[in-house]
Amino acid sequence: MGYIHCCAGLRKSKSYAISPEENYSFAQVDYLENCPICGHTVTQLTRIDFDNQVSVCRSINEKARRLFNKMKTLILFEKKTEGVRLKAYSKFYLNYNEFGVKKKCYSNLSTLKIGLFENKDLTVQGKF
Image 1 (spheres, rainbow, N blue to C red):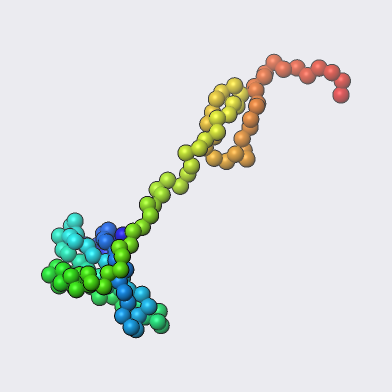
Image 2: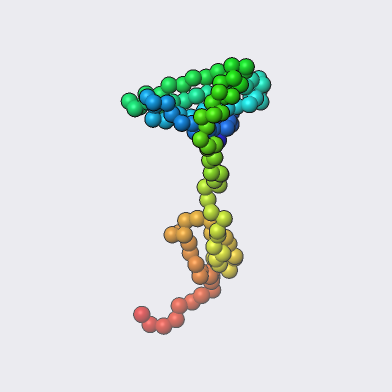
């Protein structure tokens, strides 16, 4: 799944890898069936040649549909992206006891004070 810029925003589109022509090393077609804002159909052909120069061909509405129908015979496979992980933190947390109160530690294990008890009336006995 790729993105096409339409109506001042990136819209999710279907991406297809196509067989590149003789002077190109990479070719890809992005197809947006209809934009949620304006309703246009957009087809974008992106190619990279052997000198790493990018050429982009973009068409809208009826021309886009005709271009995509021509490219259907050249499609090798549809590109699928893996799901993006939205949460950057783990769901694991550590239960610990600080001053007799159960707490959860979500991060920063280095500053954890495990096993402390608050004893105000503690007197130290013995010789030092």
